[in-house]
Length: 192
Ligand code: URA
Image 1 (cartoon, helix red, strand yellow):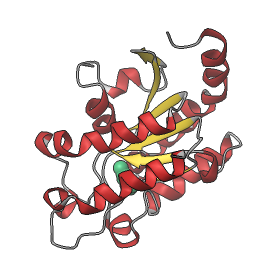
Image 2 (tube, helix red, strand yellow):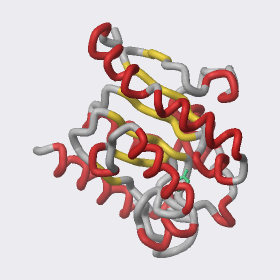
Image 3 (cartoon, protein in one colour):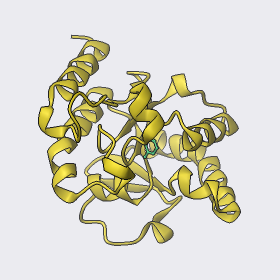
């Protein structure tokens, strides 16, 4: 099975998960991008625009994410973007721990298929979903490479938080600017 087929299979299982939906017939937002991506971005949960379109990060935060990717010479087509939660929670509230527990296996499977060199967390919810034992806050961890169990991770602030906070916008751009050097570092040192 190709990576593309394997990802399509996961998307099919997400669409079939009735227990994951907050309202009947809700649109799934499984994630999208390059199946061979070396960098994967993980957000929190779809918002209204993502719920409408079935695509991740297509609203205002997504536009800023695309800008930041462009600032380091990347296009959306180069990376894979997914969320910890595949359906929009009601009223855009934070996902509950049991909802993350239910839906996390989809993200873990997507990571296992893509095998990215680097996983960038967009916000603390993504960080805590995949690294639940990490107790340091994102205000400390942002922009710093973490290696856990042979996988490199980079916690970043959520782009939505930067939309209303000019200082955070620059911090995010500065953290993004570190990604190319981190990729070189991972190539040289590996993650074991
Ligand atoms: N915020 C997220 O965390 N994910 C999206 O897909 C859109 C906004």
